[in-house]
Amino acid sequence: MMPNEPKTNDEVSLWTCLHDGSLESIANDPMARSLTFVFDVPYIWEFHKYPESSRFHLVLGNVSKAVALDHSPWPRELKIPEGLSWEESQKLRWDHYAKGRSQSIDWLTTAKKLSTSNDYDISNATYLEENNQVILKLEITNHEDEYSTLEITAETLATSLNGTRELSREEFLSLGNAYWDAFGKQAS
Image (cartoon, rainbow, N blue to C red; front, side, top):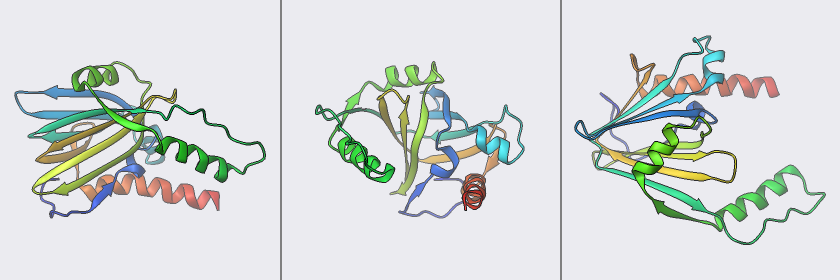
């Protein structure tokens, strides 16, 4: 769990903070039983007037499980009829995607691949606190029909800015929420 925060069983979305951010690196320290994820989310830095070199660090402590899954698409070709609205065509895309399945892949190979390429963005991220553990789930895409899911179970999840300024869950989420609230007001 995040330090000094009450335990819950509610899944918490990290979408507002990490969506479309780039996964820059994964540091695996087996002796310390930790994993550190580093994310670049330029629109957050620009909005809050942080330096371009800013990065979110998510550190999982006492990791007990790290699972990597790839999405295997449904083999039937997706055909979107002409004349559909964006919403209707998007629903067809999601329905087609949902017919695919997740398949396990090698964790170390996947972590290395994701750490050596800046072509992977976060499409969704959540964490759940349950039974004195935290489960972080990251859905990652390279926008070329390659989708991976990482699921990490650990005792703790700490968030920081640049690995130095610790952020509480509320502080972390507020950085993303402030951006998306302002974005929504601009669109209105």
